Length: 347
Image (cartoon, rainbow, N blue to C red; front, side):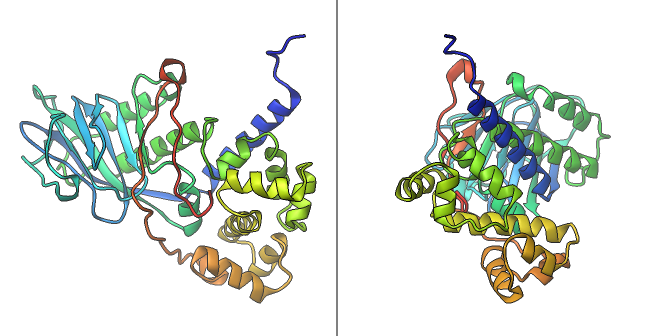
């Protein structure tokens, strides 16, 4: 018998997880803005912290170090980048032994216009991004707080083309770069979250549930039939487990009780339908609510606004999460992938 052959359950779990990845990416509404684009020389510090937004730093050429509170400096080289999904005290500098406090980082020499690479210069594209709906923020909270992408990661080679396009943009004032750079940064972000979502070492959260063979078919059914009677007993039955065993193991995987997980999943799906122009009444029925008032209360509890307001496009921003770990995307074959820690209302 060939024990190395994948089972049908393994294939089904992978297919379900991949569908979830596509659903997540399709649901995220992201908008990036470029803060500055240029190069630093000499002594300098750069930080996007303190504005209540996620941010990014892309190293176009040269090298630098990412410093964050209580953590070893992270060496960044050309074509590396870091995405801070939440507002975390940090700064970049040319040295690894900086003693400055990330919470009080101050800029050094001003950024120069991006042109021919100067000796010992570091060229950066830095900016911010926010999620245009509470739904997108909830989805983003399923991911690590910070991500470092590496130019030598074979699974991220497509990003090299995006770096090239950024470098081809005409040089302008460092503080007023081409708006196309922001769109390219958005594309880069989607590549990165797809890469992370497809990895299988997730600690807790929506993706952790999808990666568990015993829960993946259940999650797929819940996404396809959100309006069905998904009591804890029915979830356990669909997962072929006793109620007590299901409650224990599902709560460990998702980070919360099954009923709370169901509520958040239904509201994610509802928000997606509303954003697509579906009426509030039809959306409520689709996710299992016969009462408009009950659906409105549930939606407001999760999304922070009433469904009618959400449908009209007035999306609110939720508060940022506490500081989490810096996550470096590494090649599994080289070092293995360390466990990630999540901080999320749906985890």
